[in-house]
Amino acid sequence: MSSIDPYAGRAAGVVEEVEASHMRVLVTGSSGLVGSELAKRLRGQGHTVRTLVRREANERQGEIAWSPAEGQIAASELEGLDAVVHLAGESIAEGRWNDEKKKRILESRVQGTKLLAETIGKLKQKPSTFVCASAIGIYGSRGDEKLTEESAAGEGFLADVCQAWEKACEPARKAGIRVVNLRIGVVLSREGGALKKMLLPFQLGAGGRLGSGQQFMSWITRDDLVQVIQHAIEHTELSGPVNAVAPEPVTNKVFTQALGKVLHRPTLFPVPAPAARLAFGEMADELLLSSTRVVPEKLQGSGYQFASADIEGGLRTALQR
Image: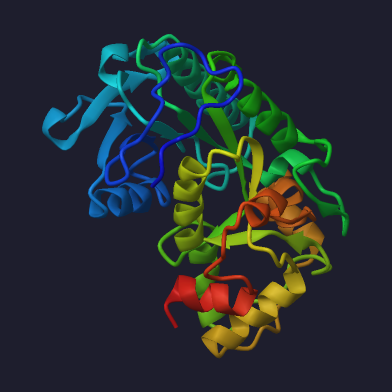
């Protein structure tokens, strides 16, 4: 990796260069689907990885304890990092949404992000880069409108959450740290997330489209997302919102057909929209029936090459078929 170039507004004390062969990276959400793979990849390349945990820290494993709800973090342990990657947050797909669940979804993102942004912004040796997860839910349901990073935010609970989430990064940005808000799409992996939940009914031949099947789904494989995060750390021209999705969003109907083809199973059992709403409540409209056609304009402009650009190839990679 080349030296990180200075940029306008950099605050005094920000680490100016990263050695070509070594980075010092802090990762939150390191036990999750994406964070665990990112930490493994970085360590495998010889980088030093520290992780934030909400329990007693194992210092030998590079862990640092924190409590976002109580505003507690060992700031001195964060001195001298090259980058911070923040992926932690309450799962939006686990459990039915009620007022308490929605509160946890919002607070787990905003509290942790604000605490991290304020803390690293006050360090003597600040990291050069803060990569913070966000989501394509910020655009709301927009039919077949093609959405880039320049598109306005939409409406709905997730759109509101994502806007507050990204705004919570502001203290780091004001301190001169380059902030990248990765607006992540549906992450494909057989080990977790939406795809894992779909596998059993599809393998049993009971899979089918959701609602009309015309709603757009913007996706990315876990392998690509991990590489995108590292790309965002290394490419200093990237800042602000960055759509972390494959270049070919597909309708739910096309996705359903592709998954059936990869699994060699029929897809003859559609789930009508009313049935989805009955089963999942508000989550159905915000996640399953929402149409979000997002393209990765900034990533492609920065030269990122997707390993999985089409949905059939992405599913084969995610399922290793």
